[in-house]
Every structure is written in C-alpha cells, then in structure tokens.
Image (cartoon, rainbow, N blue to C red; front, top):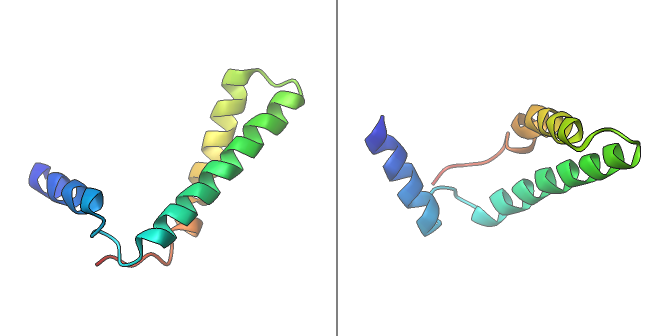
Length: 74
C-alpha cells in the first residue's frame, strides 16, 4: 500500500498522474470556490464559524465525485 501511495504522489508532483492536469486544477478550484462561498454565506447568516466550515466541507465533499467523475489517469 505504501509503495502505491508514494508512486502516485511522485507522479502527481511531476504532473504525470492525470492526463489533463489543468482540468484537475480547474475542478479542484471549483470545489474550493464553492466551499468558500458556502462558508461566507453561512457566516453572514449568523452560523458559528466551526459549523459553517463543517457544513461547507460536507457539502463540497458530497459533490467531489460529480466534479471529478470524468478525470482520466495517464
């Protein structure tokens, strides 16, 4: 298990894990932006910061499979 992890990490850091690294970064940024907007909106609604972070994390975690569904590995 450890060799698989280190090999994947090495390929990721070299930019050779995914066929289109730009698509991965764009989808990651989309998830980050959604989480940021959710935290800000929940904060403006008066939700405690810790709860806003937990709710935004759960929501974005739930949409990750949708965001990353079409990624191809090299």
